[in-house]
Length: 279
Ligand code: ZN
Ligand code: MN
Ligand code: MN
Image 1 (cartoon, rainbow, N blue to C red):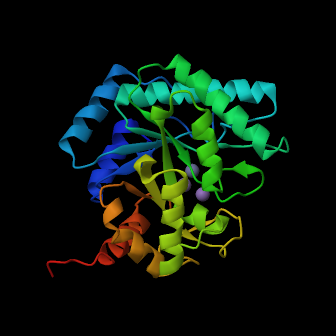
Image 2: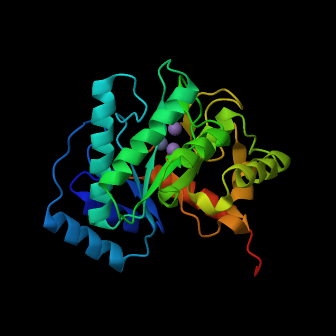
Image 3: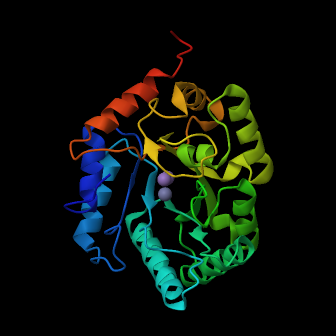
């Protein structure tokens, strides 16, 4: 959800199209610095949210952050920016801060994983006692992105001192592009069996529900409207009827315009896939 006009407008937008959960940014998503949240911003947001049926709320971090940047300057800025994101989430009472683990830019995956965990330990130290969870998002593995294998997320979590604060978000487009075939029943079952064995379903905080423009295993991150891409309706039917995930937030990150007609259409389609036992 856009926050153009203030963070509380994301809640208004969510209410207007019947969301039960939502994702937003807490600052401009392509700038290092953001305008401070005022007391009024915070109280208006909280009041609206409380009166709504929306929750939990997921925040996506800004795209500039790279927790394993090789450039010292960018690494320092990334850590400060992540701390700022956590501060904002905490002020707003947001449950989950979702972010991509990082891109190693040639330093190698092992080195990248170590640096990401180091970044998280530093930032967690600066934000002791916060309630907001740090949520690693699965990636498509485009370029030098880390997080396209569940094992990589496991390694990061294992290196984080306060592992209680760590959770994971499964992006359906990303995992499919990364080589987890959620488009078929067999592949879907195997994917979540793997996830449970490697990470544990208890750490699953949210889904990004996106179809994929590109083919299975492409390692390319291009989102498509639900049912219009290479995953197709079968994969989403399996997800929408999976009892294990009934209360896990499912967020759309599909292309959209300011009137959100596309979101309405995608939500309607996803909800229509739910098989009602009482019918
Ligand atoms: Zn993301
Ligand atoms: Mn995503
Ligand atoms: Mn993506």
